[in-house]
Amino acid sequence: MARARSTPSSTRLTRDATRLVSLALALHSSGSRVEDQYWENELGTLLNKLMRAGNDTIIDSALDHLSKTNLGGYEVLIEQAETLSESCVIEKDGARYDVLLIVAPIVAWTRYSIPACDLPTSTVTSLQSHLQAHVLAANTQVAVMPRLASLDQMPRSFCETWEWLLKLGAQALALPGALPKLHIEPDAFNMLADTRYLVAAIAVPEGQPLFRWQEEPGELGNGRVKCLEAWGDATQALFTELLAGCGFEILVPDAYYVSNREADRRVRPLSVKAAVSWLGSALNIEPSQLRAVVAGCGEQRIDEYRIGFTQKNKNEVVYGCLWPLYGREDDQPLLDSEPTPIDTVDEIASLLKECGVTDIRRLPGTLPPDFCEDCGAPHFPNPSGEMVHAELPEDAETAPAHFH
Image 1 (cartoon, helix red, strand yellow):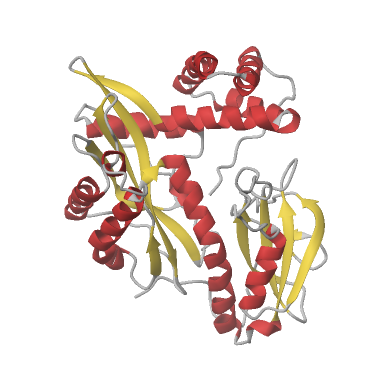
Image 2: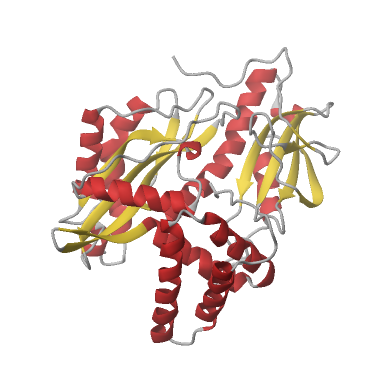
């Protein structure tokens, strides 16, 4: 899911933030690959300095400024920040290695609680072997976090992602150092459909392929598809044991940020379907007796939609779903043969109707993406347009419990 950036405390840019903005705009305006490389090197030098210092505030303030003034420059800067926080070069014994932070997502859904669990050493060893046999290129070295992690346990900033990259990269190359620390997972908002991540770093001699599909792209470029099929077949039994009581879909392991976004896209419709199904059981009602309230949320523009569920004759929000957006998702260029995509709100409404919910309210404008100050759970819209805490009625079945 999209990471929450810190809100800059001042609208005035520091010297380094101004420099980041200037370099991002210069790269965005570049007219050649040679010039691109020059600006990328300049940006890389500054971003690496800021990440070494743990200074996310400067990066965030530059992104915040560009998001309001130049979306092209914003996309350039966030792409560079992502690239440099998920990949680097590490030296060992005079040799240089390309290192990449990757995740292998598993999109899961259940009526129970989706586990985020520690992995036994034997399971870690098996997963590493399957990665190298089915996904990674020859000559790669890999280190896997011994935890099937939830989003809340993973890095929350570019600097923290960079720290995970260096620590896991050192583990992959058998260099001294500790594993990254996981965040403590809050219990406030238990999702019925969510993603669990196997996090790893891979290292390979500089300039060599990282993934098997680079070595064997396939006649029609379907090497990635074949890798996913082999990875899924090899790990199905392992993930079935780890995710007891859950249905799940195994996604292809890939670079940290792109895999994160793809997992979030896959989980969006599943979270809506799981919510409607579970609420029907918890409240002992039919889907047609539910009302869904859909609101666009964001600071400057709509960054996500939030769906609040109420009973049809009541205004109290009993559950909610998040539908994050990525990039300019509603404004992508189309090929001549491609059909025009439906609007996001229409897509959500169509999915709700497919699930049997017919009372659907669409709120106009953009609401703030509020969270509960006490427990951190996201707030969801009620029919009056207020963002409120979702709470089941006292006579309902309790919130999702662990599967036994």
